Image (tube, rainbow, N blue to C red; front, side, top):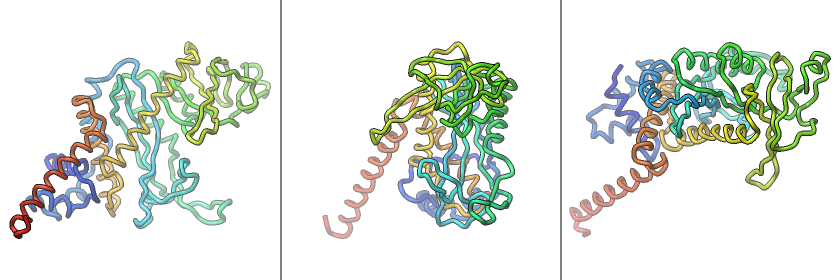
Length: 355
């Protein structure tokens, strides 16, 4: 592995304020690293999650705490102009309510004491073709579901001896198989939201008798907890209802469940707010580390994703040390770049007799 070039490339992703390219990096270094060398670096190496863990492990060990949480979520790196492949294909974006073309990145973020570190990730590959009845045509499908990927990733986190108490995610990852896996195989707690039409029973006996109903149909009071049984789970869960106001002033409802039956409703609310760290993570990847750079081949795309995540780790270390968030750190770099540009302009004007 070319460690020196990895450091230079990831630094370039942080410091660049336009499209990041091999040519751009070579130009920034006045040609001391050629365009071809950067291209070979991205196309001949194989960076993966094991490489990431080797780099973040010392930081995790420094900051980990028993009350740490693993936050699971995915994001789409939009690539509308890149040729479609198993990696770059169409994925449904819940935020936009439609499918978009790009790379679907699934992340596991470790959060402890306000420090956020990526400890695992996977890229969704739609490596199969299948018939879609609704669309009436062949579409790309993945041979492994995102829930299956996440279970593998969480297992790796336990094998890496990461100290955490809870797994937090959104409704996509509240499958019964995933809840059972966390509860029984990993012996950890989870806090997950249920879709409003998810069927639950208010007692084990009612569940066994098939007396399940949509969670939204239950007469629940906010701020209270209720013991429920979810279909396909053979252990009790604690349920609470949370009503919130959206940005457009509309009202939304969240149904949170956990296998930690000792929690109170307000503790569940506070704990779930830690999920926001992964949203900040995704925003920083896209806004500060050039996650969507125009790489073309599968290997260069995967290696660039790794470098972008690694660049985030560097920003997070700086954030902790200098007490500035990622966007503020980048703003300082931008001001310095403007000052250097302004000074160079003055020099060139003097040479041209325009001073």
